[in-house]
Length: 363
Image (cartoon, rainbow, N blue to C red; front, side):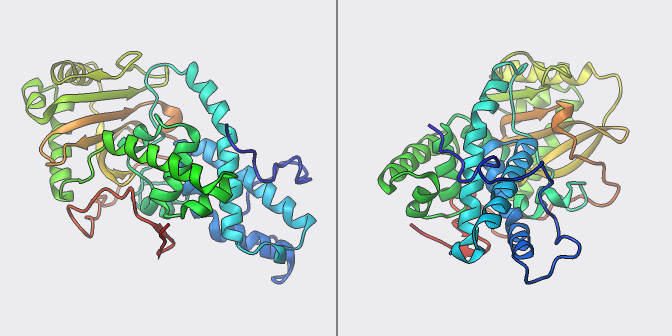
């Protein structure tokens, strides 16, 4: 059962809906309580966005949760002195996490009527790729998990996912997570153990060198968009899975993901040859991984993310998002877009970063 938001907008006595702040209000004194509360929210907005996005996989829902978080936070500070809150960061994360958990039921209802496979909303994180600053580009670039990992996280319960994200991605101790979720530390540890075992059973712990990943991505895109079945058969792993999320707005593969090398090769080559117009291909980072973004003119048509085998020589998963509603943050880039290489090639995938604004934390 999802926890109730710490301070709902209704209980907080908030007035009409207002945008979450992005800067101090005009005329506010810098030492005024309202200014202090606004500054604290802005200081932690990137963190809140990244935590909630990793829990929900949707930018629109994440922005809505941040709006609710701001209303709760501002309402709390109208009723009680800010000095009573000993740790504003922990308090804000607690509000945001509980609002995200409360939103899960609405998200689950939408998924029941969603057409075809559902994929998380891709976040193109190159500086020049057009992701607006108010979607916390910096936080997502450093603290988001991969598209493949987000797909695995979708198979967890909401509470398991919240615990996994807070502990494995952001390094919160189980005791602190227990307070946020209004659970005992023992129950949180049990949730964390189940979630970690589930995730590790479905995700390799190591990734190939970034240069190898980039080369494999380019080979795959050339074969897939060129309709070259022979080349596809060489780069696809035998147990590859292909997800195509069109949301009913664009042609997709069908109601379920496609498994197996031969079926995947036929699907991808046919998918490419059905397009009359040749797309403009831009290579970007999507959720931290090398990916291809396809444009028709200035409009994004698809985002293609490849998950590679640990050796990096074959593609084990293909995630294609063509639903226009999930591509609204993607913009063309006329400048260089080569992604930066990882500082430590061959390191484990960052599912246990234990990093919070550069601070290592352990349980």
